[in-house]
Each structure stands twice: as C-alpha cells, then as structure tokens.
Image (cartoon, helix red, strand yellow):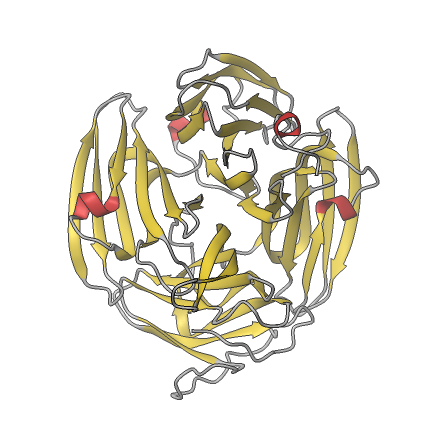
Length: 489
C-alpha cells in the first residue's frame, strides 16, 4: 500500500512511495454440476463441507452474489472467501502456475439489521461494503460515520428487492480521507460483507476483513471486563495496528497490554474508537497476544490488523484478528492441500489463550472431506497460558483437509491462521473465521460477494454440522437478482 497522509498503516508512508430471487426453493435436479451452468447441485454430508470455487480467474470481470437453497430447513454454516491470483509461466514446463496475491474469508449466511464497522478510506485504500437485500420489499439502509475527530456524517441508500449494492465507503461521504466507526442500520434484514482493499505499494490490491461488530454478538461474562487477541506480531517486517471499538452507552477506560510492549491506557467515548499503531522496527519479529482490561465501563471490542512487509517494504499480506472468538464450541474449515487454484506450501496454525481463573482443556476433532472422524487431539491450557498448535503436527498428517470441531472446557480465546508460502516465496496469511451454528433454521443462504475475472476468484463454503445429509442447489445471481451462468467446481 502506498499510504499518502492518512490513517491505515500510516508508517508505510515513510517506508514506501505514495502510491432471490425472492421465491420458493429452486427445484432440485439430479443432474451433476457442469461448467457454465446457472444451477449447481449441492449435497453436504454430515460433519462435512461442500465448496464451490471459481473454475478460472481469467474470464470476463463479473461481480454478483451467491444463493444456496436446501430442500429442507437446516442450520448450515457458511463462509465467503475472495482471493486474487496472478498467472506465471513455468520456464521449464511452459505451463501456467498461479501466484496467490491476497485472500480473505468472511462469515456468510447470517442476515442482520444493525452492524458496526471500523473503516478508513483515502487515496489508495478503502473499505468496500457489499449488501444483499433478499426480501420481497426494498430495504432502506442508513449509515452514520462517527469520525476520529468527534464529528459525524450520515448517508443513506435504498436497495431494491433481491438486489445487491456494492460501494466504497468513500462514496458515501464528502471528505476524501476519513476514519472512524461506521454504524449501519437497515429497515429490512440484509446480508453484508465489509473488506479493506489496500494498494500494496506496487499497484496490487490486498484484501482484509474490516473490523466488525455483529448485531446481538454472543459474549461470555468475562468478556465484559476484558478482551483477548490471541495473535499479534510486531518488530522487523511487521506493522501492527490495534483497534478498540466502544459500542456501549458509557465511556470505557482501561489498559491495552501487548506482548513485548508497555501497557497503553485508553479512554473511548460511546460510539468511538481507539487506535494504536506499532510500526516496524529493528527488533526481531515477536509474536504474542494482546489483552484489553477495562477499568471502568465494559471492555471494548478489540481487533488487530497485521501487515507483513517484504524486503522492499511493500505489503505481502494483511489480515484481521478479532476478540469475539472466545467460548466453548466453534467449527472451522481447514485445508493445507495445495491445488491448481491455491498453490504453494500451506500451513494452518491455531492460537489459544486462557485468561480464566482455572485451567482449560481444548478438544479438537478433525472430520475429513467425507465427514469421517479421522483425528482427535486435546490439550490442557493453564491459567494465563498461550499455546500455538500446528494442525499438521497435532494430527500427524499432511495435508489436513476437512473441518474442525473445537470444544473448550470451560472456554478459551482462539485464532486460526492459514499461511501460504507462494511460488514466488511470499508469505500470504489469512484469518479463518471460527464459526458457530446459527440460531434457527432456514432454506435460503446468501453469500454476499462473488467476484471473478482479472485474477479475482471466489469460494462459497458450506459446513453441515448435523447428522443427516443436506441436499439442495447453489447459484450465482447478478446484482439485479437475475441468474447468470458461471463456471464453478
């Protein structure tokens, strides 16, 4: 990213040059999916996942959204992954290989009426919001930006029935640059995805989830007094940005503790944020944790944006760590097997922190792509301890492919990172969302953002935690809600 002047990754300005179809369920067909179709068959075995991936990224550029429909009501878990690759010609074989440029994954399939983001926008960085209205009536969406300088701005948009709205936050407001807490309220339940799109300093776009606070987000009793980020990284080659968001009605004060750093006091007014930058320095890279301890008011939501830099100070990858993955039961997809679309050496590492007053035990079960239980592991985590678990080492197999069931007694804070050493030797990191089974059940599931073309690719992932098979269909729709033929595998 070539940051010139403002807020996101400010230190890099010194290091680099500026630079539903709303309808009944679609009829199920026994015909197997084939490239260039409007409807794809979906069958998800118990304790297994089903993936739909863009077959090629060199097609005409297109943006839309996905709809999964099941024959009967279910509580499937959904993840929407967007990534960008570039084609390289192997000088020996003459074949094309794919260099992973950036990748970001998002929870999907859950509709909301209220949501809060931390956003920043400027000349070469922005937050892109993608909103899908899967209702029979239009949705009126209100945006309120509480800026870092204490001022606020408002904007509104109307999204027609079954339409998708995709826009940059910078399009909503007058100022060319800005940062702050963006509160979004919709008159109808909508599906939304927010992601940073940042220039890496060499004209390539890096993706990362924007810090987000979901409506009615689950929280343990302990999270009212402290928040935990299981992974942070500072030192040479890393830029660390800590973001605290106060969504409560009273001021929050306390201390922000970071491994290898002095504790930093904070004070945050309602609806505002606190930002701490830790720029790269000459020290050896140090990984650790961050803990937010409230003195008055509730502990704010905490996030870490980690940017890893190459030797020429361009951004190799950028990812977001959150503090709301604390609890007893989570599910996550895992895949360390390289493929034609995702090449390189892939690792998956779980970071767990126990800040309770007693020891906790973490139980992991690995289900393969067919839903069979093929590995299990448990680990005791002492009070105040942070553990790092390489999944291939834990299960004694490579690759590890399928889904994980993570259960903690009495509860821990978790972060799961996927790291790819690309063909060109770059390290690209993605935070894998740890997912919970949604309340209630339904037959329609929305994936807010589908992109293909000019290197862009998309994966729709569905996890079935039930003990019975779920069958249905998947399709991609245009922004106006009409179907389009796509090439998926």
